[in-house]
Length: 411
Image 1: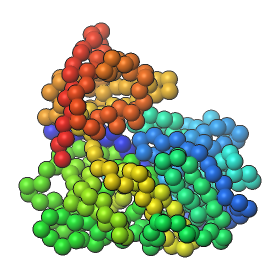
Image 2: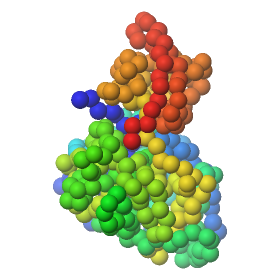
Image 3: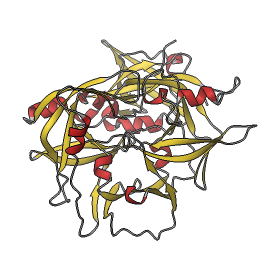
Image 4: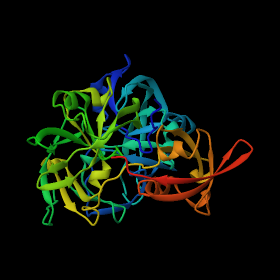
């Protein structure tokens, strides 16, 4: 059976193998020095595929880096590093979501700055081949930054206003309406919290979960957790899919729902849930029970206060909205100028897309009378998460094919 290639991707980087030329202790010694803020600083960001994209500067060249709590180090695309003349040495293999490894190099003496954060420079320690992921994101993707950055500040993320606000970690005091959730960094530098999932007819199940803001999904449960707790019942509605792309390549799972996810006193009802089928990589480990991604966390204003071992959550206007998954059976990649050329790269069997006879390689010309160039990849994702009927025109070789696509909920 074909499986659907992920509309959203999760990027979770953990070091699997270091080269002989450089050890973990040497990389750790290159960690950034503490940066003192005289007053809070607000940094705008863009959202693409539920990922926070921040404008940075490397050697005075503007780039886009993705903010990811599932990453520790400053990372840059290896082709971009070469074009900027960064000093790269040795070899490294990394893994994360998925079963494969990604090969890269160490970076010596590289750093990035953030406009508006005067005097700040953050080390870039690794160069990896990230460029292939841009077509799944529909946005420039030149690098990643995570825990080593977050630990220098208290970081407030407001998904509604698309702003990141940085506070001095020694002076920060919280007095808002949110709830403080105890947090601990694991050995890979990822923030973990305790949460509960509920399934019908049984007691709630406790687990330790990574808060992964580099995952555009909602909830992913690790394969050992799913199997040991018998979480998927025989009559539960699920379908098989490739659900994301990361440092370890494609990640596979059954897509369904759990009855609820409880974080502190907050209960998210019937979140879309991926029951991982990966036999290698992050979701094959029994050290955590799963990942909580942005489809859950964007229901809150999120305050990352690692200095005080807590994550503060304030519900926002999205809190009561249902989480949904793609209802079309289609997966697009975005290419061309400003990522406005949309190419179907997979059609899952027994879905509205297969019923409409859409095929891999079809290029979207228009939808509902509007040219494809008037949409973004994010807008297509959002449209296909809601029931309804749409008129699509696609180019197939020299032909133009017109179809009706009737979206329906599967889970």
